[in-house]
Length: 73
Image (spheres, rainbow, N blue to C red):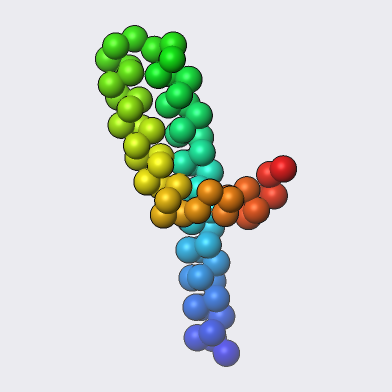
């Protein structure tokens, strides 16, 4: 059925976006902590915002969703 194939593709797209958001959240936390430690004062203030946004992104997308989806071990 054409309609079911379309909705299956749409759901696969949402699954990919959720997994990508999970990976971006993990990457944002890692980079935020690195630049928070070694960055200047202006960079530190921005990295606090990046860390908070990454935590929110991980809360929405899930911590291990991207790791399981992209098979990162």
